[in-house]
Structures are given as C-alpha cells and as structure tokens.
Length: 224
Image 1 (cartoon, rainbow, N blue to C red):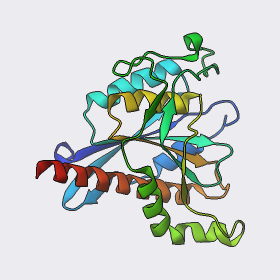
Image 2: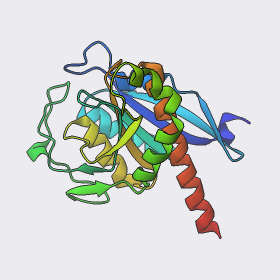
Image 3: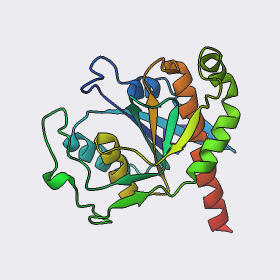
C-alpha cells in the first residue's frame, strides 16, 4: 500500500528548552516510533515532527498539521515530575505566563481560539481512562525492568488533569480547539526516570494504538 493510501497519524515531540538543553525526552521517544501502524485491515502512516519550544512555532505547526487532515494527532512533551507516562485529559487557557525559547510571552497569558474563543478549559474527546487501563494491561513486560529496581507499584501510564501552562498546555489547547476527538497529549518522564527511551516509545505506541481503536469504533458506530 502506498503512503498516499494510508491514513495519517501525526506525532509531535518538543525540542530542547531550559532544564532540558541537551535532549528532550519527548522527541527522543517520538523518533523511535515506527513509521506505520496496522489496525483491523487499515494501514496508518506515522509522521513524526519536532516542534521548537516557541509559541509562534506551535501556532505554525498546529496549522500545518491539521491542513493534512490527519486521523489522529498525538502531542508528546516531557515532565520533570512524571513517574510514568501521563495521559492528559484537558488543557487550560489563561495560564501561559512563561517566556518561550525566543523570550516571547503571550499577551495577558492567554490566547483567543478560532473555534472556542477564550474558553477556560478544553477537554479531550477520547476516553482517557479507558486508554490508561488498556495500556497498563498490555505494557507489563515493558514496565517490569523499571519496577524490579524501584517502585513495585509502578504502572506504565496514569490519567492526568495537569498538562501545565507552558508550551505543552499551549499545543494541546490549540489542537483540541481544532478537533478534540482526534487529539491527545501525553507527558513522558525524563530519560531513565524510570523508563529508558525505548520503553517510553513502546508505551507511547500502545497509547496511539488505543486512540486508533477508539476512533475506528466511533466511525463504525456512526456509519451504522
């Protein structure tokens, strides 16, 4: 099957920023994802993009991504406090008070969204709790090495409502404004805290698979 016939999934990671100057764990994990995914006879092309940690770059990236009419968009960022992969349920507006890599700030720490204006909160239309439950059940082998040397109750993922007020929250808000039922954001922990990059990439891939399943099931239900 040619790439033109495959449905498109776009996955983004962020470039370096203050505190993560050498490597950003999000982009390192995204780079390791396979180029293709199959689900129930459908083929998907995974396109991977690195986004600079700048508000303007996010605006440009989100506009370019959605022009391609992807089946799914998954944004990935790094969290210095995450102990596993956090699957984010929502994004807040009015909290963007931190300057980006270019030293730029958003006026009044907020943005006016094309479809939702100055809404305070936008929620993911996917079932995040179901994604977390399924991925935790399928990633036991991936988590086992980290669990054996640390937290015995460690899981691969957990649901979160704290995407933050920096570029992670900003890119999620912007994409949720376009299509909340095809957008997800996940926070990955720093490299080797506790997962190595390959383990993190495997968990992210499993999350993508669960998103594809939900979208496909919704399309089937709507077609009947």
